[in-house]
Image (cartoon, rainbow, N blue to C red; front, side, top):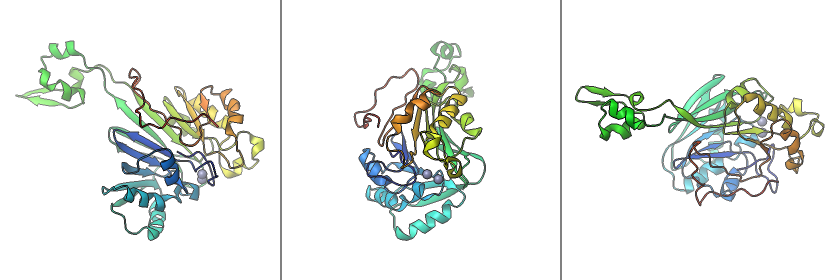
Length: 313
Ligand SMILES: [Zn+2]
Ligand SMILES: [Zn+2]
């Protein structure tokens, strides 16, 4: 929803992402003003079940109190979970001092290892450690897809038609002493959907490994060129070319979106070709860009309520 790093600008909110699936949402990062960025992008806050924090720098967490209040105002009463690196509990407790009364429970958990997997509906979300000078995590969403239902095989196996749907959903069915398993009627698993999000960091070997095969890889691109900031190393951030190189190294990445632009870079698109020379399908989104990702052979158009991205900056 936002694409800025460090501080919000008049026309650029801080970096954040809303992932929506089957009526539920996961918000990644919540810097100052993220609730405004969400409203501008036309996002409903009530379905946010989980807030994932990459790290505890102000530009990624200082919008939490306002966001939690707004989620409360949206009518949410179900529990919400906040996940982040070690220290998240302390930071959330401190920020909650100014929003003590919410109509829902907030459950906080901290990631303590280099890699950790959590679950969101049928998706698994893999957290992986980045290199930013403080504990910081990227997140990779994987939505698996079972194999195609094979009617001929199901008939050969003598599976009653009334169980087909359940097997297709991956359930095992027991009927009058007979056990039917999904593999009796399904073909090999098909390619699912993968989305990888990664900011703030220097390049690491883990990033390409996690981004491999992503339909969309959203990666920090703080600076267009090394000359723009001699302190890129000191700041522990990425250049466009470094993000593009990791997208290439990953293999199988379909699209790269850069984000977390430095306030010193008013026009990221001016540097886009530097990244495209390395990874051709690179984009420099502006706030509010939205993309629907479907399974490979499903070409469902985005729903009418989906905000359409404006042109690139
Ligand atoms: Zn940042
Ligand atoms: Zn940071």
